[in-house]
Length: 431
Ligand SMILES: *Cc1c(COP(=O)(O)O)cnc(C)c1O
Image: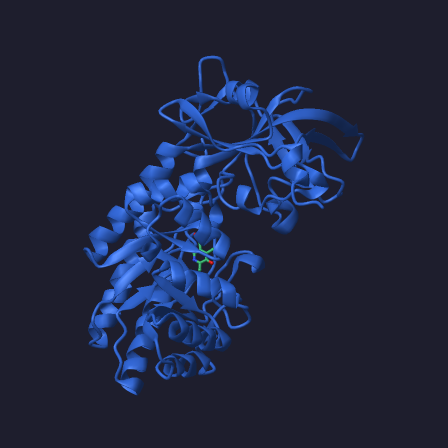
C-alpha cells in the first residue's frame, strides 16, 4: 500500500491505523478526514531522531503547521517535543490556545500585517522570519513600543530551481517570498537588519519548494546558506548562529512517487553543511528543518460516499462523491495526483477508469481524472489516500458546504478532533 497506515482487513475493507474505513464512514458520516495518529507521531520521531543524529542537540524540528493546523495537532507536537512554523495570527492563536509554548513558534509569511506582528511579539513567538523591508521597520517600532527585543531570521531565496510544480516552487528569484541572493538584495537586507534597534538577527532561512524527491537541492541549499552566512560575517563582523533549511520532503501520492527515507535528506544535507562550515571556518549553526506534508500527508485519508455515476459513451465516466474541492482543492489547483480505493471493495481489482468528481457547482471540481478504481456502485465508500496535508487546511465553505469532521485513529480507537461544521456554523457570521 501507498502508506504504512493503510491495509485491508478480513472483510476486504480498507483500514487506516487498524480501523475499518467503512465503519468510520458509517459512524461519523462523510466526507470525513481520518488520520493515523501513530504514523504522525512516528514520523515526527523519525525527523527528531535524525536531527539529533546529525546535529546533536544543536537543531530542532519545526512542524510546518499550515499543512494541517488544529489544536490537537499542536498538542501532539508539544508532546513530541518539537516546535512549529506558523504563517498567520490565526495559527498562532490556535497553537497558544492548545497550550503550545510560543517560544517554540517560528512566524513566516510574505505579508504579515502590523497587528499580526504585534500579537506575535506580545505572546512571545520565538522567531519572526523577516521577508521584506517594511516588516523590519514594523518590528523595530513594535520592539520599541513593547520594550522587548525581537529575534528574527531573514528569509533568503537561494536561487535553486527544483523540479516540482510551479505553484510550490519557492527558491528561485521570481518568487514572492524572501530576498534574492544573486542581485545582492539578501546581503543588503542582512546588513540593514543590524541598523534596526530591538531587532536581533539570529540567522538565515530558506525553503526551496515542496514535494521534492531528490537530496541534491537540499545539499545545494545548505551550502549556499553557509556560504552566505560566511560572506555576511566577512562583510559585517557578525556571525549568525542559526540556519533554517525549510521543508519540502516529497511523499508518495501514487506508486510512481519515489519517496525517500527522510533521514537520507537530513544526512546528505548535514554532510554538505558541515563540509562547507569546515571549508569557510564557519561555526556549525543551530539547524532548523520544517517538514509539513511529510509529517501529516501520508497519515491522512478522506472518505466519501459515491452518489451519481454518469457514463458518457466514448468520453468518460464521472463518479461523483459527496465532497470535492470544498474539502480538497488540490486537483483543481494544480492537478495533484492521488491514489483512490473503494473502501468496501479493497480486495477487488482496480479495473475501472473513472473521473472522480465533487459536488460543487464548478466543472473543475474534480478529485482525479482517468484514475483506476474498483468497479463503483452508488453507496460505496470511496477513499482518497494521502490527504493529510493541505486538504483540511485548504478547505472552504464554497457552495455553503459545511467543513468535514476530522477523526484521529490511535491503536484502532477513533475520536473526533475537529467537529463537522453545522448549518448554524455556516450562517453564524451573517448579519
Ligand atoms: C510550506 C512551507 C514548509 C513546509 O513544506 P512541506 O512541503 O509541507 O514540507 C516549510 N517552510 C516554509 C517556510 C513553508 O512555506
